Amino acid sequence: QVQLQQWGAGLLKPSETLSLTCAVHGGSFSAYYWVWIRQSPGKGLEWIGETTHRESTNYNPSLESRVSITVDASKNQFSLRLNSVIAADTAVYYCARGCYPNDNGGNQLDYWGQGILVTVSS
Amino acid sequence: EIVLTQSPGTLSLSPGERATLSCRASQSVDSSYVAWYQQHPGQAPRLLIYGASNRATGIPYRFSGSGSGADFTLTISRLEPEDFAVYFCQQYGGGSPRRTFGQGTKVEIK
Image (cartoon, rainbow over all chains, first blue to last red; front, top):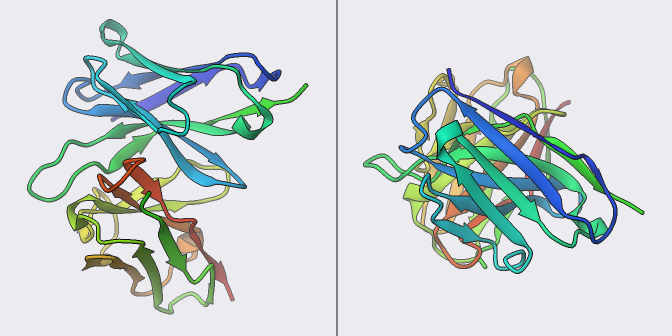
């Protein structure tokens, strides 16, 4: 049974840093890659970025200057930091597991965390 | 950026009816990396279909996916009460950013 459990601060002021962590329970941490997605009413589902277990990362160009995804493989955890938040960063943030390609497809997100609402407000 | 446009925005149907949801990409995408997700209010998305046509583990047979190139379809053969939700398509690999989602189709009870 795979579960992704996420936590972090839910209320931030503009210019502060968003910090979330996702713990992976069950399954192989190294056989998948790890993704952050956010969802806001105005922009729908937005890919933030992703990392391998060895912290090889890719980010959405629209956020790349402010985002960092790190890995603690010893704890099967990965984290998101988003600097200098603004009101437009208000969203529900999800962590998810990404599947490497195989004969049937790939890059789908087969398990998701429960989501955390992060509100940016002065 | 590859834009995914889903239609219709809202689909009003009765239980037992057939639902056909469309996802059109702004350019051709690799069908191997097209997925569909279901989301109920207050919950995380749930993977339904990957590789355009493969059902994820535990997904009922009434859900099917098809398509290639820039046009993809999710079909629910006979709607059950728990199928009323929002559905998103997603592609990976084409363009920048490398993963994009459609804006969603809401399937509501008529």
